[in-house]
Image (tube, rainbow over all chains, first blue to last red; front, side):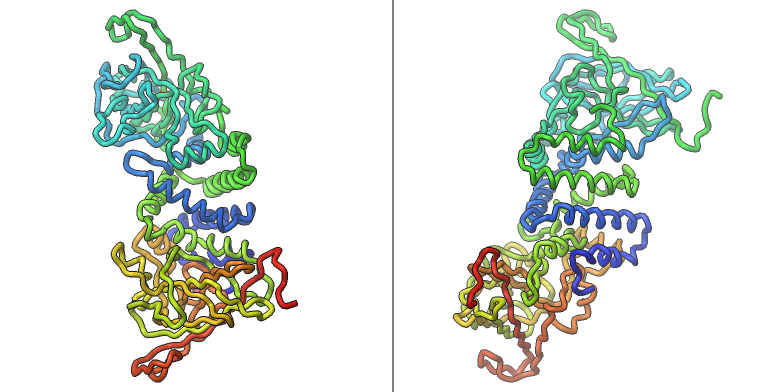
Length: 294
Length: 294
């Protein structure tokens, strides 16, 4: 293993992994080493560029904390997150498509009942969301756990307001016996991903904007069905064709109907504008789970 | 740009970089995206594995500070650092070969005169180093700036002892008019790279040990010559064939002569063991610099 050179080093590194106990880890690290080395060879990476890369990753690491995940932003903006989502979510036609999780999901969000206001003081126009969770055969999926999270009208998620911020625009609820659910929140707007860090500087250097089209995040879990992680996008948004994280799918674009005033779905009367959204989520059956209703 | 899928996403991400101003950055990021995506496809990376990767990089970032550079350790242990060194240091035969910088170099190390003790209290047996800096035609290179750094006999560099540690086993000196230099320090021993962090856990999972064979680090700068970054390794070391960072080159292995007692090269008399080392460094001419002496 002396005198490794640019031609032999890849095989020498891989040979050093002969004793790896987990075959899957060995397979993954083999591919990591091969592609990392092929990249350096392809571009003939200079020592200065290598060090710039080290410094960039260091900055990504240092800005990352329990409220901000710059490595996920990096993965998202390089299309890796959407690729992994696509690779792992081949579904039968008719199922709601998956898209990226994003960096703003939080475990154990507050629980709400149907009809509650998940906005919980978030800035923005009122939005009344109605929806339904069904299976591929059209069967209702009752008692599904529905996680919802979204940015406010300033483009910020609650976790971006710092340690003392109250949860807003985020919560979990359950579908009713007919699979339906409904809640109030605020109208989602397009917003830039956090661009005051190294990923933002990367986007600028690459001539890219940081904007995402307006969307609501959903994660839906129900026994016997695959977990669904997706967004519902707002039709007409100017960034639908240039989402900074490549997450848009046509089937996930819905009409947010805007009302200048009037009676909302929950019976409340408004003299200021509000919007309504209705969307049906079709879950895929878990592999090995018997078909229902046939 | 809607409905990107696992087949089209790579080209869609690359198309988004059409406006990048610097061609070199565009070239590098094109290769990064292609290899990152090819890796995910090759191994069919699962969402769970993707998240484990995000967590691993986050830990690498969080343990990194101004004294510890875990991203360089990661690059070193995956052979990337040695590959980049090899790609960028094609030299004429006869020149001293380059090897990795490693994570423990420090700018502005204390200045010493020839004959001084760079050990400065470091643990270990005394070691007396004599050397010479010459060019490819054998010409002496006077007044070269020589940076030396090394671990003590416990295997630690000074910077690993924390904020209040005094500099030891580290310094800069200048070659004399005949290109020679000499200093005292302590005898280098083999040591493990820091393995109490994520890179150490990675090595364990891959069935690899973290040891490096004993070595001294040198960085030598002189006007008209290429900077030389290299090590001198100690012959007979048990890890010469399995250096954790793949840095060994046969031409850089030297005899450390051990003396049970006696008069050292600096005239001091020792009744405890010490070692001596002599090594000649041959610098490459800077491109575009006229040959000397012909």
